[in-house]
Amino acid sequence: MNSGIGNLALSIGMLAVFALGAGGMWLIAKKRDVKRGVLMLIAGAVILGNVLIWTMPIT
Image (cartoon, rainbow, N blue to C red; front, top):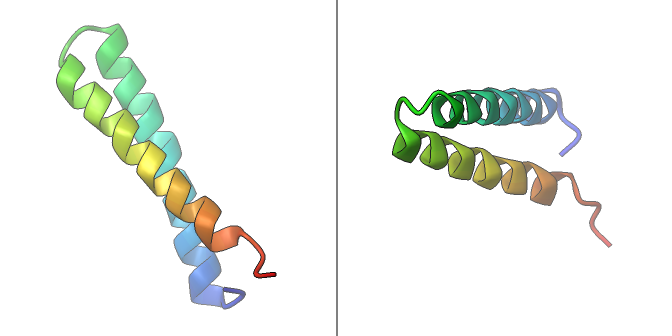
């Protein structure tokens, strides 16, 4: 996936990982909505896994 749109998708995915991680931790730390914060962390982990799969070299 060395195309321009592919690289853009991976970049947006990583931005989403950082945003979901920060937002989830903030919700958990402030005890506002712990369930939603945990779900945000899980969603970020899933997106991170997808980005890692797509960036692995094919051997």
